[in-house]
Image (cartoon, rainbow, N blue to C red):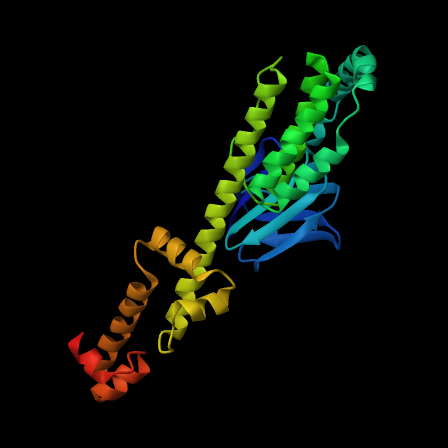
Length: 303
């Protein structure tokens, strides 16, 4: 049976990665089955039971929280806040819950006296999701300025930073699809300045990766456009109109990603098509220069 690569990721770790023959995901339209060769798609995942089968293995099930599933080519990416196998939902979880409840009681007074900066967090996550680095860093600074005003103890600061870190990681993975930047891990008992610096670095790295991926996707789209429209009169201005990006930005990222100016890349495409026509047809130079985008047969002859 044909297989595909499945990546099941939680907010803070990889839950499962490997070959799969079949996958069933809980979505807003019910249990959704995926096999190798499935068409590209993206859908929301709702809390429920996810099932998958690896080659030569029995079906495995896991309880998953909300998230998303994306099929692209032969890769299936499932991003969820949490996932657990049935055997893990046992006394160990109960013990962990008890320990957390005990810790919450011990810290109750401190947490009650330190209001969480929800407004600042909301502004930060909005700027982060919009890939606005300057606004996100400024919002993060405002978040810590609010904390500094109430001077939380080290345990409370750790709890608050832990929650914020989780929200940033979830936004990076689910909204920005940034998966390779290491999670922010401020050292235990780290002070406010260190925590802010750690999260600032994480935000900048995530948005740099997102920008790099976005520019790579843009260049791929431009290359495809040039391949399909090489016979047309293509200029930086026409690319600007086609892709809604500033001409200087298009020129810069194209050179960065390909090592060539767009005009040199386009010339190469035209020459290859012209060579094919010269080799395989009896058309005139004027005709070939026209249908390959050169227009001027004298210029074409010099090339």
